Structures are given as C-alpha cells and as structure tokens.
Length: 281
Image 1 (tube, rainbow, N blue to C red):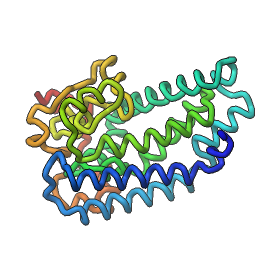
Image 2 (tube, helix red, strand yellow; image 1 turned 60 degrees about the vertical axis):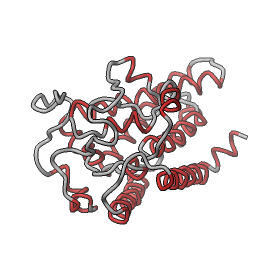
Image 3 (cartoon, rainbow, N blue to C red; image 1 turned 90 degrees about the horizontal axis):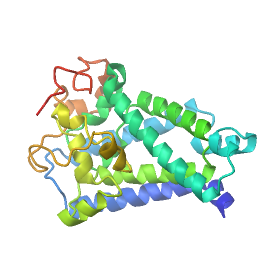
C-alpha cells in the first residue's frame, strides 16, 4: 500500500492540491471573510504564473526532491530515525512534527534576516488575502526552502511516507489558511487548538509590522504559542485591517515582472529585526 502511494506521489499531490484549491475558491465566492476590490483576473493570472515558474525552476534545480531523498536515506541508513529502532507510526508522527517545527523556524528566519526578508516580503506584498496568496513565493525563496527541507529530511531520517504526508498537508493547509473564507467564531476557536485557521494567519499579513511578525505557523499553532509569537486578532479587526506591506501598494506591483524584481527594490523594512517599524502597536 505504502509503495503504491509513493509510486503515485506526483498524481496524489496534484489531486489534493487541485481539490483543495477548487473547494477554497468556491468557498470564497459563497462566504467571503473580507470584501475584495482588486479584480481576481489581475491577481490570479500573475499568482498562478508565478506557481508555474516556481515549479519549473524547482524541477530544473534539484535532481531529487524531499520524498526521493527520504527513500535514499532509508536505503542507506542516513539520519536519526533510520538509526533508531522505532515503530513506523511513531517515526512518522515525530517526523511530521519536526518538519513542521523546521518550517516554522525557517519562516521566522526569513522575517529576521534582512536579505531573506527581501525575498519573503514578496509573499506579504499581495494587496488581497485569498487562496492564491498561499501560492505566491519568490523562486529564490522556493529554492532555499527546498535546500532547508532536504537538509532536515536527511538529518532526521524521516520515513518517505512521512515526508509525503507532510508535503500534502503543507500544500493543503497553505491554501486553507490563506483562503478568504468566513468560519463561525466558535469553529475558528476550536480549530485553533489543532491547526492554523485563516483568521489566525490573516493577522500575519497585516500591514502593521508588529502583526506581520507574529503567527508564523502554517500547519500547527503550537509553535507560536510555545515560542511567544502568537497574536489572537489584528488591532483593526479582520474587516478593517490593511493587507500587505507599506512599500509596494500599487496594482502594478502585482504583476509578475515586478514581483520577481521586488527583492532588489527599496529598503528591507518591516522585518522582525527592523527596529524602526517593528513596534507597530
């Protein structure tokens, strides 16, 4: 069963991705959380063009990706869990938790280091917050993120099935927690115990730097709670808050060419170590 799933990894990931994307896009139309003023045709065409470019660059850059490296590590006995005699279910569970922690720490790093923030701020410069925002990452950030992920997979010796489950989960939750969907307050409150909700993550996309530099989790909310980066609600409320960053606020900045060259433009303000703007309360 596991071998069949791993053999069909690309189709499984694509099916889950398209399924969640279609559900979230439909939900946004039926029950949006916030009014959107920028035409979808402008943002969506450029955001999806970026996804295609990211995918091509990733495939051309790396001869092997995370699941393939996990299989190689299993065969050669690399990494912590391949050296320990743990039940598969426990190794899978611990691997998913450690990979999620690594993504959280990487996210904090990309906010804290000015050079990395220049890359990551392109994700934050979207002027609306919806399901396609979860796909909007600079190609260089995508490549660096894969390097970090491969290093973590090799170091912990994560089982291939755990890496596949984590990749599918990360893609699905990135679409979910960026979606412009309305959840009942009680449902959101309960879900926050086990996963990052759209209302929780939307705070992270606030134009106020103190809010931008909070709620770094993608899958699990626990790291934000434990490490002191959790913020329950935006200061201006979800309908009143401004999405994006101060530097790039024109519709022209949403075009693919501007997104790609954005790391070279202006100062690296708004990051976690930017003392001029980080105290935005």
